[in-house]
Amino acid sequence: MKKVVLAYSGGLDTSCCVRWLKDKGYEVICFIADVGQNDDFVKVEKRALSGGAARVYIKDLKTEFVDEFIFKSLKANAVYEGKYLLATALSRPLIAKYLVEVAHKEKAQAIAHGCTGKGNDQVRFEVTARILDSSLEIIAPVRIWEFKSREEEIEYAHDKKIPIDVTKKKLYSIDKNLWGVSIESGVLEDVWVEPPADCYQWTKSPEDAPNKPTYIEVEFNKGIPVKINGKAYSGIELIEKLNKVGAANGVGRSDMIENRLVGIKSREIYEAPAGAILYCAHKELEAMVLDRELMHYKETRSSLYGELIYNGLWYSPIRVGISKFIEESQKNVTGTVRLKLYKGNCTVVGRKSRHSLYKQELATYSKGDKFDQSLAEGFIRIYSMPFQV
Ligand code: ARG
Image (cartoon, rainbow, N blue to C red; front, side, top):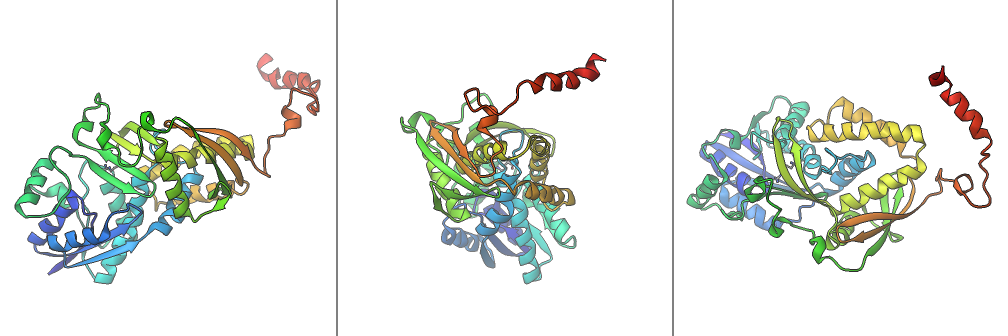
């Protein structure tokens, strides 16, 4: 019997995949990655087994996810097309890495995932798997099976008595992890329709958020957030805390039309409260401690870094190389940013750092000015000379 290790989430697609692979004659091993999606893993495991899995592996990947993926992305200010903080995209290479590891342990010939043939996730899983072990066969049931729509899949699940949570009315496809939620499908496919309140998983709507702002202080050490309001937290706890306070204030929502790698535009709703707060705070601290040349050059790398993550190239030499530069750029990114969360907005209201390059005596228009304004004339003459000539 051929063995396959399936990246399993307990959602509609992967639940149908288990049964489908089994019916095709495979022994199916399910791999469940805990990337902070806060699922009831006992329930998910039961679901895998009742669907026909021979064995289930559950692995807590949260610490590695935060330290090796999320914080690296944060240090780079990585964002895709200005709106997406890459929660789903960042988790894929990590999950794929362990999928390959489990396949080795199980001596399986194949790995499988529940991604569609139209999305980015298939690319991210498969590129990573090919980089790590190109001898493994890759099966993507959703790309080849007979169902033509999510509705048909739901029918299949009902016929085969596979437990699922999706209904034909609530057709959302949701991907969750510590760094954020991605929501698509169903009514959201009509890009003129305002996202219904029930599609949001974490955040309060700004209208229902408190009428009073919440102030928080986030402290960074070399680009990594380490404290909230003076109290130290682990990376996981810190993100969880900020997700809570951000969500309560309606922070971190975005409604986006994005360019997928496979060439289509799609609409996705994102929620990333902690991500939004940290991105905003981190950028602000950099504005104060990085010199102009470094800051501007780094900005040009941010969008590329985001694109590489989005396009599934986490384990590519260029991503690794840029990451070394980003790392180097962070040595002075230590300090505290004060933020105001209010009805969906996250605004910076204060910043301090011992590495600050902001010098009040140079910037001031009041007394104590140390900037010799008389020198400006010569500076501008020479600066403009080539254009004058
Ligand atoms: N569009 C996002 C990406 O490519 C999320 C994909 C998964 N979305 C979902 N709702 N299951 O990273």
